[in-house]
Structure formats: C-alpha cells, structure tokens
Length: 83
Image 1 (spheres, rainbow, N blue to C red):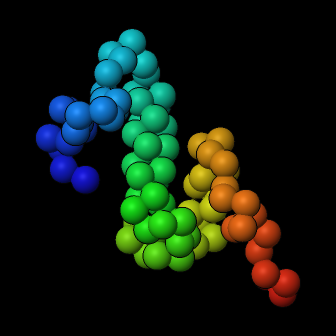
Image 2: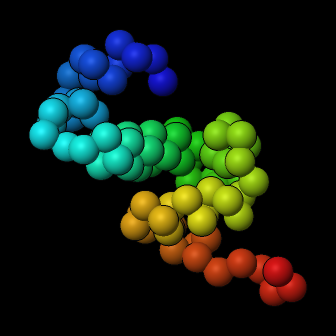
C-alpha cells in the first residue's frame, strides 16, 4: 500500500488518517485493521496467502486479528485438529 493511498485514498474509500483526535495507539490500530482487511480481501480470504504477504505465520495473523478485535472469516475460525 502506497503512502499516497493513505493520505488521499481512491474515490469511494475512507481515508485512514482522517481523525487527528486519535492517540497514536488508536491510529496505529485503525491502520492495522484496515491494512489487514484490505489485504485479506485482495487475497480473496485466503489467510495463508495474506499471512505470507504480511511476513507472518498464519497463526500470528489470527492472533493479531483477535488482538485488534477483528472478525475472523467463518471458514477459518477453527484450527485443524492436531494444532
């Protein structure tokens, strides 16, 4: 994602840096939520591919999403038996 996209997003998309009343922690969380959401969407919900593009292991992507209060796609909520 390019910085210019964050400052002036494509038409119809909300800016990530719109509210200057947020603390740095709140703005960081908001950025991470939106960045992960867009990437998962670009990967068509394939969490393994999304995690790889983020440089994370898939389990760490799930952990980060839970920490941020994000909803994990239904088909991905349960880890396979044996984990």
